[in-house]
Length: 442
Image (cartoon, rainbow, N blue to C red; front, side, top):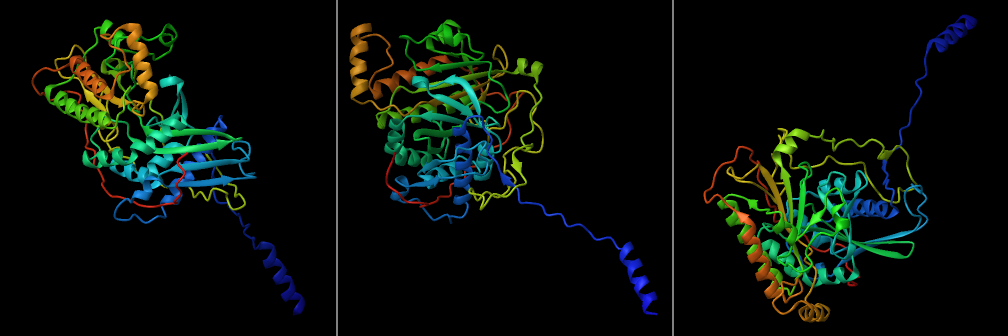
């Protein structure tokens, strides 16, 4: 009897399958970029937004928020060592002020984080003033610009007034939309960066680009610049091309009103040497080319199913992006004004259908002793009546505004276009306060 029971138990044991347990490690975000500096930026932005998400939004910003910064130092960072430096520092300036600015510009922090960290930023062959380098986020919604320590100091000088101006105009401005400012330290070298909204569209390619100051002295694109795929032309090129901006009377009035307010504000801050960046999208050409749009949701290769010891980043898996796109796909020549905030369509009587992207850029140049000396030298060289770029802020703003008014051509009537933009930007005017207080600016 005992033997029979034993044989039955053995038979059941042979037929019973033991389910093998499969342990899945938590996904940890990797920050892959060919440039270690960009890997650190991706890591830092990811860390910063995660930290900010735990900070309760107070009623209002305080004066100390405009002096604050958050800093983190990473040593012996062995996880992801193929892509990240072993030792680096990341510093974010005025984190709560820039968070508040992002809200006022209707930019969701999660979308901002995903745009800058999901894939590596893309280098641009464009160069700013004094050879400043640029990158765009992988989805082309944001521009990352390498700036100088002097630019950082000037940003601190104007930030409180800039923020107040954005509050008063409800974010309705042609000025750069400053969304973050950072210092990255790798191998002892410090690099400063700002992140702004891209003036140009993330989906409608620009076929011609101008940088306009209202000055005629030495304001032509160089031969080297003209060899680029998308050269940046200047004032004399614009005039010689016979180029005009064809927008209807209503859009012209709104544009000039914003521009007037913006340049008056810059003059009050004693800033000059800024430009109007103009990008032109040819709708007919865009319809003919119609490149296949890349999906923004493809995360292939950006996360690993491997846990680090503590993760070092404290990075959770991606959260869904809160984008402003509607469900209906945009057609050729269409844009969403909640995203392409600088876009204006040409009027229906224009020579051809175009979309113009226009914004004021490079606003961090003060009229200091160096600029006064440059003005004196250029005046001696070119004469007192020459349209040189180095003039006092009041004169610069007036000349700049007057020049821009001459390049706009309206149809004197407001018409509905056959290729409209759609949607409306909603400004969230919530405010935030102190994060991680420190008072050193640079």
